[in-house]
Amino acid sequence: MFCRNQTSRATVARGSAMEMEVKRGRFRLSMLEDSAEDCEVQRQIEMEVRIREGACKLLAACSQRDQALEASKTLLTSNSRILALMTQLQRMKEAQAMQRAERRSSDGGSVDQRLPCSGKIAISDIRIPLMWKDSEYFKNKGELHQCAVFCLLQVGTEIHDTDLVIVDRTLTDICFVEPVIFTDVPPGFDLRVELYSCCVEEEFNTGFSTRRLSRLGSASSKKFMASLETAASCSSQSSGTRSGESSPRGESPVLLPVLSERGPKYHLLAHTSLTLCHVQNSFRTHDLTISDTEESSFWLPLYGNMCCRLVAQPLCMTQVVMCGKLRIRSETNPEDWRDVYSVLSGSDLKCYQPQDDADSLETPLFTIPINKETRVCARERDPALNTHSITIINQCGDETTHTILTHSSEDTHNWMEAFWQHFYDMSQWKQCCKELMKIEEPSPKKMVVVTKQGSLYHEMVTPPSTQTRNHLLSPNRPVSSEIQSLLSTYYDNSADQTATLHRGRGLDVRGPE
Image (cartoon, rainbow, N blue to C red; front, side, top):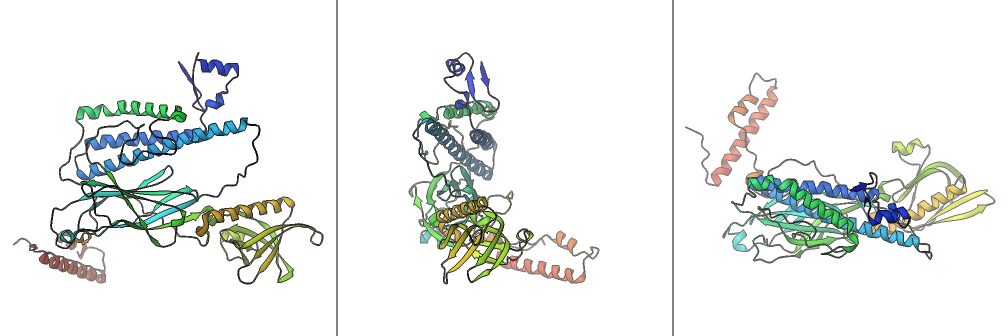
């Protein structure tokens, strides 16, 4: 029989040797407890397990090609998230063990605990050029080879996937336009971009039988959760992969039970890694590492490069670092002291007259630049000023000096600490702090059918039926004569353009006699 601590999820068997050691005081139960962060990671793992089971059931039941492709993509993405979360949970357990060991050691020295701020990064407008043979692209000869592709993007445990795209020889590049945003990212991030491909066949296996589908839920769930609990409890003695390493994508990890589901199979086609040095407020080209050969069924003739826009927004550029009431003067006019409300954010110290101005986003009275060329130092108590002061010196062009007075020594200490932390953040994020880069929010997800990019047929506007046109142009509708004239002209032009396009393709567009 087991007793479970409701708040910490620590599990100790009653009557076991471990419980006796806890009662004797040789072990503390807190050493076996999970932190709130551990519980959050385990909650995310359980959620991904349920998503994985749902994808398996959908993959077994679906009869449409597009449904099977989407379900298989969801299954691969969920497996990747589970593996990343399990790796993170193992590292957290090891870090907690090291912290306990450091607390027990008596010779622990002082360590600088200053950490850089996190930020938000976004990758958008991904374009991967293709290099078809002349006979395939220009002469349109050979078998029409189609593949379903998508990108998997990962930073730490945060994993996103792009929309699915059907690719054939009519395309010159693969495009993923929508931005993918990662939050709470450190400056030392490693953004891994992986391109997966699956050969699209007209006929594919529809999956499990109905009897096996009915048994899939509970059995696989219990087996999978047992594997997760074993991995969490034996994190220090992990098998299969060492700490810090991950299994290759496209293969089932050692700790993930393999479900022999049928249906589409995605394979890793190419990958690359992007770091802080690749961040730039414009498009850049990056090298791709191709993972397979031309003999594979999912092969696409990649050119070996990827174009994208990678931008970043550190928190020190978007949030207020420090704010408060100050007295400031410039050395060019030493007698002109100004009582202002100052806000340190981004590359400026903005000074407002009343405090409400900072909230209403009005123009500040004046601004003091804060960048890597700025020097800030605290002065001892000045007998003339009878208080502590801070000096800000900017050496860009003509040297300018500002003196800041605070209300107390504690305020001086807080402002100096804010300045040093701000300088440290800017030194870690480097070029991202020169100017605020714009991040576009992704458009809302829509339920769309997988379509082929770049096809003139799918981009063509199909004119409405005669019944719809007559209904819109009916004199009984409350529409002005000008709007009726515009609608009539639009429908006539659309019908003429479509008929001309179909005649060029050799199609009969005549209506019924």
